Amino acid sequence: MADSVDGRKTDAPKLDSTLSKGLMILETLTAHRGGKGVTELSKELGLTKSNTFRLLQTLCALGYVRNNRDKTYSATLKTWQIGRAGVENLNLREVSRPAMQHLANETGEVIYLAVPEHLQIVYIDKIDSSDPIRSWNPIGGSAPIHCVGTGKAILAANYGTLRDTVKHNLVRYTDRTITDIEALDADIALTRKRGYAFDTGEFRERGLSFGAALTLPAGEAVAAIGISIPRRKLMDGTEERLGGLVADAAQSVSQRLKLL
Amino acid sequence: MADSVDGRKTDAPKLDSTLSKGLMILETLTAHRGGKGVTELSKELGLTKSNTFRLLQTLCALGYVRNNRDKTYSATLKTWQIGRAGVENLNLREVSRPAMQHLANETGEVIYLAVPEHLQIVYIDKIDSSDPIRSWNPIGGSAPIHCVGTGKAILAANYGTLRDTVKHNLVRYTDRTITDIEALDADIALTRKRGYAFDTGEFRERGLSFGAALTLPAGEAVAAIGISIPRRKLMDGTEERLGGLVADAAQSVSQRLKLL
DNA sequence: ACATTTATTCCGTATATTGACACAAAAGAC
DNA sequence: GTCTTTTGTGTCAATATACGGAATAAATGT
Image (cartoon, rainbow over all chains, first blue to last red; front, top):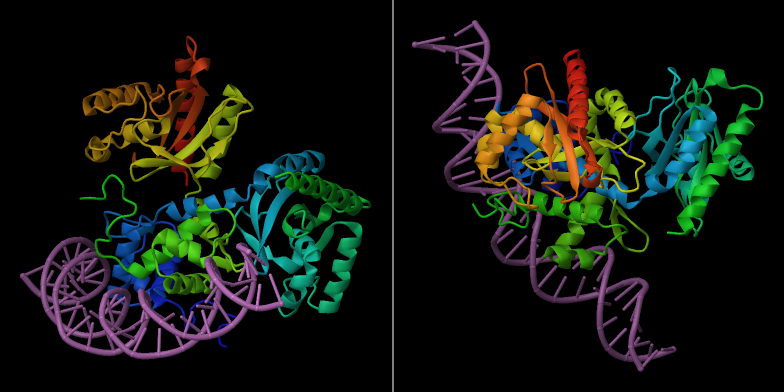
């Protein structure tokens, strides 16, 4: 009841503490360039030195962590390798690439491929623009689902199951962020009608984005393709053009997904 | 002394079992497309159903695993996201990209970026060739350090510290694999002399590769750039040309690394 | 040389994890 | 439709497991 906002440090509600701690250590180590010492880690995570030490030992034995010769511990690439297998399994990237490339050529803007995760979307692929002023989300990065193009597109496709969950999580990021469920209802309806989602700077003030969902035969959205542009580039007709393009691209990829 | 070759199933020497089991589950789930049931998992890993169940619960609570509505569990992308941060920290990819792209344009072959990990190298980036018959290592994949171009390049740069370790691990993969330490000594010496490593099909019969190391100011190799080509493409002068190119590329990237 | 910080080991103890069993809810057989 | 089998989920006591504190060792700084 106390961890709804923070959700991090937290009293464990009822979970295997040792696994939990081990993963915390892993997270901490991967997040930090270079190694950390035992003491440093234990303080940071509020654990005993002994405990931290033993956890590190097993993480080493399992190959997730390396013990550098200067007595400092750092994460190996194993975590990434394992995680990558997961991404590869949904070979969305491969299937989506051609359409994304086409979009990139056609628009010259940054193209994203994103999948839903909790109430966020995670970018699993992108094609960069040559424009020096361009969107800066890295692959692996995430954004709230209710205020970016890709997210709203996915939301629109699965609104039945998602509406109630997002309802209480409409966090504000900019003036334009939709924080009212009724406004969201309307926006989603519009999205469904025109076939693409349009984010008018609801997450980052100066960054607009378009999105359209990739759907399985069952109709469920598993990902979305998106285009991001700087606000200043928005001109008459731009919205319709980019929106149409991204919708077409998503359509064509969804088509391919059926054949797998 | 029993797990030096295999290193996998293993008798735990003395490690926190719960963390170990939890990570096993995570590995298994990420490796398998689609979800697995708790019974299936428990059988596969030789654990109790209750135990598996509880571990899954905590993995869910921590966001690493999702419980699908058909009662099956599957890995989320969290593992990957976390691991990715680790890769991002060495922003080698960013720095290396231009040189790799140049190599790709110049040669039309597959270009790899690899980092050492234990006695292997892990591919952290690549640029694909349009050639239908091309190298097939995925990003995130790995290869033995002593028989691919990138690996041997790294080996050559850090031979002082690595020689003794690889000495007992010269596993054979093809007829050409170097399994004799003295032969390796000679090959490494040659590599240092000419500035690039040349793998004549020592890992995969039909796949040749070139490699050159990326070194830090201190002289330590942290990664390598490689070119892979099908054996049939090897002609007079090809070796010198590709070797020279990859050496130059690595040189230029190493230069940039100094400025960070 | 001494003081201080850090990594590593030891060990008795209690807590947190475990596995057998029980129950519920599907799935499948017929 | 009922019965059987399989799967997911909860319970609970037993004890093995992981824990924390203190002791040691190694490194670092002064």
